[in-house]
Amino acid sequence: MTTKLWIADFGYDQALRAFETSMGKLGLDYLDLYLLHWPVPKEFEKTLVSYKAAEKLLADGRVRAIGVSNFNPNHLQTLLERTSVVPVVNQIELNPLFSQNALRDVNAQRGIVTESWSPIGGGKNVARVLQNPQIRALATQHGKTPVQVVLRWHLQHGLVAIPRSVNPQHIAENFDIFDFELSSTDMATIDALNLNERVGPDPGTFDLAAFEALVASRGDGRAR
Image (cartoon, rainbow, N blue to C red; front, side, top):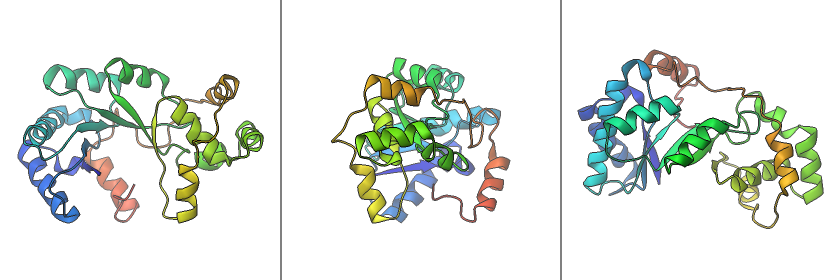
């Protein structure tokens, strides 16, 4: 079970209160993984004290692991210099059109697992990924769907993909990726699709005002 600390709740005491609120809503005694949602570089001191609050929760046994979301290499470097616990996960936007190779390498060097949000592509990139001729050809070749091919690509790169669905058939399809393997040529074909094109917010500039605007544009906005 994983949840996140929203940047609207950043700050040491605020983070601890927000955690208790989340736990009350979840009805749990402990959490498997607790993440800081964004680095917020304009107020990175608040990010750091929020992470230290997460470290306390870890030390107290309230969470089993802590991590971050959307942290770039410079954010990770400062975090590691100023805190004690290496995040177990860095959850980032990652798909065949935005493969984040450099950040994945930094995560690996630090022993941080890379977790892919919007692993099929976000927004306009979903259709661009799933309708890509090379991906569709690989799907036909392996007797799988384009979604399964993309998720298998994540898996074989050692990434943790977190596709979203409320459709039972799609959820079952997302799990059905362990009975085939992409060749090195297949993997290289998908790797070559990278455009370094981000669809989600830029972690280098995302702040509370941008977060509140995003929430307003999505209604609740917190269900990603």
